Amino acid sequence: MSVFIVDPSVAIKWVVAEAGTHEALALFGNRLVAPTLWRAECANILWKKVKRGELQADEALIAGRLLANAAVEPCLPEPELAEILQFALAIDHPAYDCVYLAAAKSLNAPLVTADDRLLRVVEAARQNAGGAACALQGVSVLSLIKSPSVP
Image (cartoon, rainbow, N blue to C red):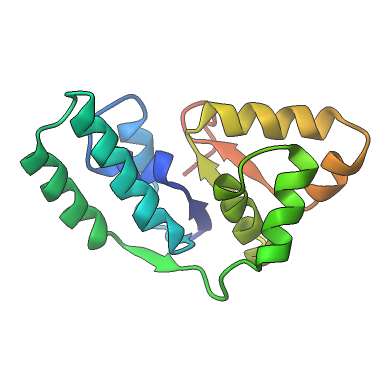
């Protein structure tokens, strides 16, 4: 059984059928870990889907209940604020996503994401010979949809 850090872009696919749902569901059976922030971010995604007319409010509430009971362990210890900020400054990306990068680093486990923007930023940072590449040293980030190697 492998250990993966999962972010809300993956978790939401467990309860809303969209591109990547099959791959996201295939992660079950592994040890899935996420910082506690993932719950609030999932709630925000569901709220946005209701606002855009993609889900009805009752569907979002059911999805939220399912996510609340998902087999995701809390990341312990939670990533330190200073480490999150170091990632955010190094790769010039919002700290919310950097929480997951910091968790991946602290647990030495790959982060699985379907967040294309985060994947692009990480790839660009790895190409940079400066501090951004150094900040990501030892951090594995896998694309949920583009990585056939994710079990």
